[in-house]
Length: 457
Ligand code: HEM
Image 1 (tube, rainbow, N blue to C red):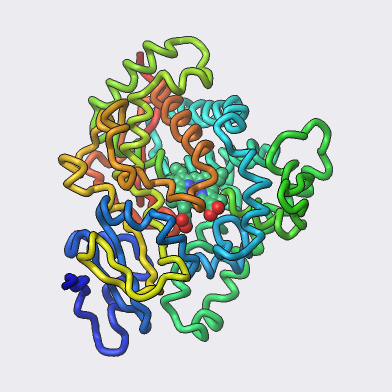
Image 2: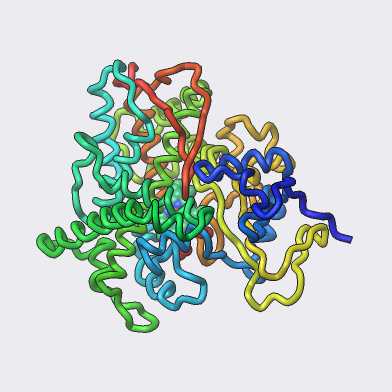
């Protein structure tokens, strides 16, 4: 006998449409997780979706012998802008392998380490800007870090300096936000409504994103000298070692757009880390003790990164609590016969069932994390971290479709946090602020403003 998967009551015909707010889907799912826990389901416009919210079930769904990434809903919608790119390709699309084999060598730990100087340089540019503010005017932590992220990504991958930390924000940032939010909402509306009322904005944002990519390409064609080792050069020149295929200009533009969309999760992590640190000032003290003893007044180098375990713990604990990448979609492998049993036979789902891993819940599993709501970087350090079950460390996704940018994202997050803690004092603009989040393909702090000034030593 299996246990029925709980479901909110809903309404006739429309099902659970009112249980999920399309303008803040992930927060609705967090509330459902708080009520139902490890597993629950909803039905929207006749389609049933199962959500999983504990470590054991997450780990089970990450078994690639039984399950794979489900490309549907918002991921299919964003194909309007990026076609069959790495993130949006269906499992059986051969082009995924071609793109992956061409791009993966550019994102290995060694390849990413070669970008450290650029990452550190951009972070220092931001701290210089913040140091000049002298703690007076409040600034949006996320707004600033979004700029830093795009600045660094564009420089490291496409060799172009946007100079986007000052002045009006680069249009790519607004366009990514517009296109990804629209992609999340479209599956919840009838097609005709999407077409009549929302298509032209979706098209405008898509055009702006592809314009950013086209400009990167044009810039490279005009300034090709000396750039022989970065992602753009590789996309323009490399051949897939397996098939001999190369990327067409449209495919290159698809990936130039996809990378900053993926990367836009990183500023959500760092702005959330600032929030958790300001709520837990003893963690700032510990991190600064570590930074001062290892880096001191000397130059911050790539070698330092692995010598600062507490700072790494801050980033991991933030990935856990913020669930900046809020989840990922899973389905049983297509040749699955009959219903699928989960949790050692406790639950049963159909063979073609869409499932979503809700990382907010998984990352707070009380059987794995004592005081799950507390911010404790030390549980993410050394042996304590190594001992955690794999299902509790899925913030970069899983298996074949794991985040290809994870090593770069890791270096960007840790380098940025270290640079900020080393050189800048931060405080909440509103000391009573409590974290509010919204987001589309990622979860970000809302209305979180800080005051910044040079670090007092
Ligand atoms: C802290 C920052 C980041 C987090 C938490 C994160 C998380 C994730 C997750 C959970 C997935 C799996 C999505 C799925 O299964 O549908 C993913 C995929 C992906 N991410 Fe990231 N990501 C981050 C940063 C980045 C960066 C910096 C880049 C670009 C350099 C990037 C590019 C991608 C791409 C292209 C995919 C699709 C990979 C594929 O399916 O082959 N991400 N990411």
